[in-house]
Image 1: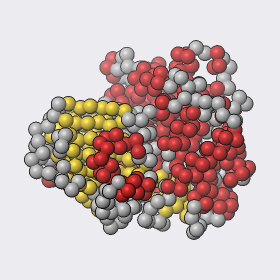
Image 2: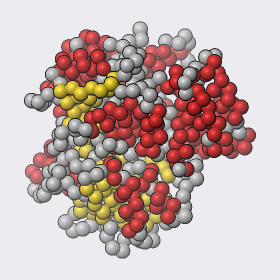
Image 3: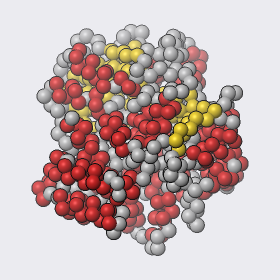
Length: 597
């Protein structure tokens, strides 16, 4: 786990040392253990790395450079099957000088070129400088566990693991980016900014499962993996459960590879309990587990976590936290670099801080809900009268409308007239959702909904959470459910194996793991990992919220004050629950305040 950064100049101009240093410093929290920079003379190339040392502590310094000096490589992430890949390379006569997974990447690339990516099982963002092709590659893992941003002004390209590493260089060049109104428009739809957009004009995300190749002749982008390649097939439960448990068990086993202390987040929900149960199979010592609890029983899962910890013999650490974490919101948004309206980032930061006092790596249950229909919204949507009879296009638009924060009409009325004119005709459905839904058209309707959430919600928000909040405290989060074998199995599985006709979520999954974790943990009602922001906005913090929204320079520029006041009043009086809308606007205002500070 690391932070990577770099520069590539078409005119072979070097990046000034002060700007290289600024990029590295901005990512220090992602990699406090080491720093390395590759800057060959005369080529205008920089590859940089801030390292969080996890595998081969002494030998894993990056960048790794080929023996002839023609290829250099840096990565942010971990390659969990590096042991097997290294054994293959040695059997072919390749000399490996370290036990680092990053050296394995270099040697594979030397032998196989960019096609080596399909051999990797891991989470990664990779940059490669290949002087033989006079090219730089940027690569992102299959589903976007690891972030990678880039910008290109026609003369030079910059890249980094976080936006904050790009802004000092752009500012030094007098090219500080402007706010991207299209991204804000999509933010109001989704509660996060979906890739490839970012909050800044001209800065984009490398898309998941994609590589980009920068040469003097131009930029080539190619998708190297797609979940849509899967096809559903009928299967008996017993055969499915056997494959599901075997894949998840091996995915968990290889994610225990580390030369530093590790543990797991444990809420007592079905996902984290299953991962911890499988971890306990593969180690002799008790698994270190971490959770936070709240005094309010509506949000407190600590008793369930303790139950799971006892069952699996864990070394369990739990702390009761004050649910009022709003003082941490600016810190959260600083690490996110963009507005996110999800309040669960705050408790995720809190449990990450707890774990980081004891370990450097945690395994999590992220991805299980999106793969196997774990959210209540799926049951609610498909239970609506008439949904089954919708035409394909009507179904897709209906699901999109169901998951949207502000509707198109609500956004149009929220904007000031001049902003509404600039954004007229921009449709978040057409721009950000329809291409994914069309790509998933061969799936049944449950899997179409899940596919959209895999591509947008998961990579745009739910994977940002463990990455940024973990990296804020130099903690690596690993996600066994997002092993590529598990993702492909999930989308070979018909939707009724996930969401049954009577609305049972994670239908076959829970049946499969009940013997492993017990019926109570497998079938306990899902609780959201969040804090009661909506109640605070209605009562004790209503004045704070009103002052924040009315006093925000950005919100005054974009939105009609009367519309914001109407949202505030409807929520205060209880005539409507506007928690999510107000939370999104508050996050936007707080983010902008932090940028202006």
